[in-house]
Length: 296
Image 1 (cartoon, helix red, strand yellow):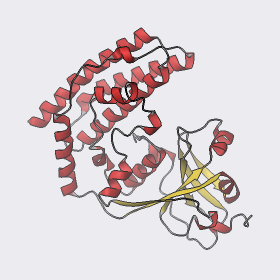
Image 2 (cartoon, one colour; image 1 turned 90 degrees about the vertical axis):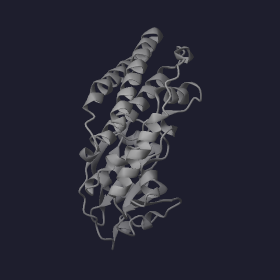
Image 3 (cartoon, one colour; image 1 turned 45 degrees about the vertical axis):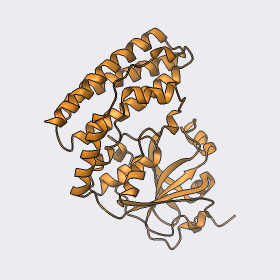
């Protein structure tokens, strides 16, 4: 066992300008996406531009869950922001496996450290959505780090000893290498508009929902609301998206209702289908409004 804290000796601390509140207003699908978005915003980048591929038709998201049985944590219907940012050379990001703890802080890149499910259960009393969960960590001194966790939302000081005991052996490093240029903004707008114009409004078979689909139904609505919130924030880079807020608030209420059913461990199937049918019809109307506005 290496001397505790040794990994932190001789490495220059990073200036921390982030905390758990830096994650407010971020609509992410994963912990890494949360951290990348927070860093982008902290570096004065309007990361909302990177949501340009986040709008999917209601029926397409629904089919991911009820036809293809996709799990929330593994939903890939639209790309993660970190993948877009890496493709556009805004960030450089690398995954490193089987890492020696002593080599974690060998440079000044942002470091997301994989932590074990056992550690999360000890600290928070619950596991993360996925087994490969990360916390964003900044070196404070030779013995301590400052960490940010996206779920549950948390930050604070963690010792080298505790961090080493939690370490899963995997890290993700990333750094800023570029910016979102005006040319990219125009490209993103054209891509969003073209994707929207081919959005289909085909019927949705709500009869696929069974009495045992409580979690699946809630998670479907969870992805739908992330999609619409991200779309609203993207549109707001070019025009007012205030007209979407009532619809988004309605989706939030449906999610809350389904979460309440989950806590009671009972899916009121007829009520759920009624809520989803109303949401679907409202979503079709909002989509048409966006299309008409973008044609003007």
